[in-house]
Length: 348
Image (tube, rainbow, N blue to C red; front, side):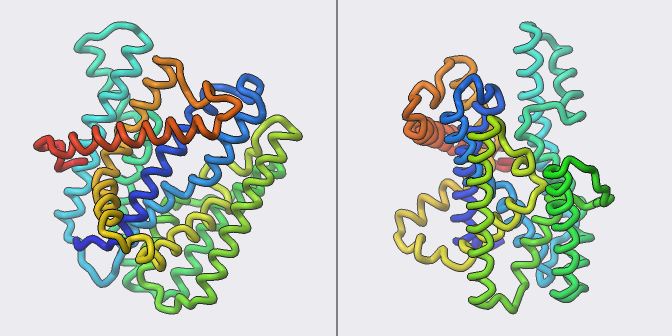
């Protein structure tokens, strides 16, 4: 499949954003606002708000590439994608599951490996591996979604995407804000929506400048609402806004759409210089490997060496940037080396 430079740029931006996300959220998820203080918590939380477009954009990239109705994807090729993800789970998912058992029990045996495999099959590995399980599901339903894209017009696709947006974004957000439980029986989740949205954007032929500006305006407005409301909740209630968290809200989809559309239309300016293009292609080529291994270095640094951006407090923002840069360099180099290892380079 021919590489489109803007996709590689967006892929590189997304993996850097994932690492920035976990640089901050690993601290938040293992501490509390009273423990680290409102200021530090707010800095980490606001950074998270800025970079949470990453996984949705990864999914839109996949949909953009795989749901093109003008290109056939043979079932054997799709099966190779699925088998590749299963092998990734077997190697990395099992390894992380075994590590969890060893760290808890302080013991290791052959039975530990078998238990690790079982835990992996049950989905009990490190949290970031959820993405691989989800990819398997998306690949399995790709033929159905591809047939839908090929046999429906843009208007029908927009209606379906809007229904998914209502069911997976608006209603869950209303439930969170008002503490109610409106049931909508939404079978296709928000990740399927992102996947389908990527396919839709590839084939949208009425993408006017006016519509593009509207997407940016709504996306920026949503981001401002998200950041300001989160900050107010932290300052006034000493807790994050639950409706502003998780995958099912209206903020993340509109912000992610704005980011995707921007890179789809304006990447040429960024990629003018050959050195930038080369760096982007290298990082993008290592992005999946970087995703798979990045929690190892973050967890070792925070939980074993007990150092984190909090050590820079009150200059925690400087601390985040320092740790982020160090993590990026180490994770990229290790991923680049892994990509040179026979067999491993075929699955990551």
